[in-house]
Length: 244
Image 1 (cartoon, rainbow, N blue to C red):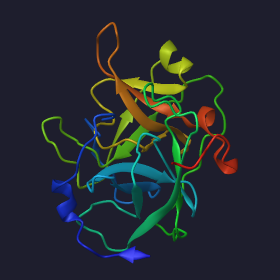
Image 2 (image 1 turned 120 degrees about the vertical axis):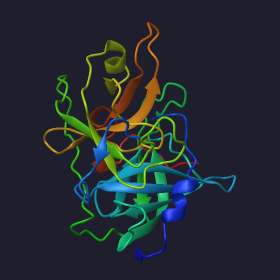
Image 3 (image 1 turned 135 degrees about the horizontal axis):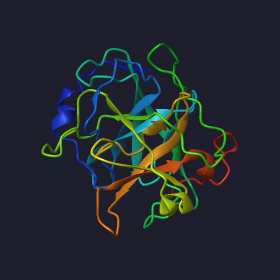
Image 4 (image 1 turned 90 degrees about the vertical axis):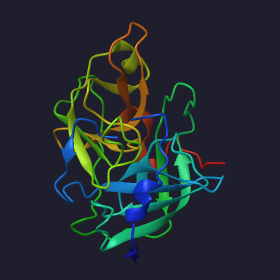
């Protein structure tokens, strides 16, 4: 179903979480050039609303990060600019399926499927993204992240427009052991971008934006992306359980 309500007021009431960083050092995406992106509205137990990202796998499922827990969810499909909301599809989530081995401390296996209550209507602005099929041990090149998260460290609200930026993955032993892809530097995802995809040169989703950690040795923050091939066999719902 479609919604034509005014989403502009959301921008000034968005509550940001600390776990992961919005797109920093990026630029506005070409409108609807990433039709798999999902603006995820999270309804919390205390009555507040929080906002993260997700991405469409097919007519029935959205993928996001497992730490994006909520009492209930609404998935907004076909969003670019939240002020311009013609023909946005607003679909409630029937049931969340977080990875059953998700660790809330280490954020290992930080991936979750959301079963939509009704089928998404696929069109030019709403299309699924394929997943990378396997991890051969080599780092993907030329990867991009996108989201509506905070684009300026000095501002405590999310971007009204879908932003994107390139990231370079680093060869990090700790990341590999925990089944993360990692990037490091001044550009990348920021607060409010959790759950969005890491999309690489073949146009497939390789990871889910997960968390940020500070190296013990110091230096720039490391951004971690849960490896999708290592975390879930999505088509068969292996290693996924319903949320309590």
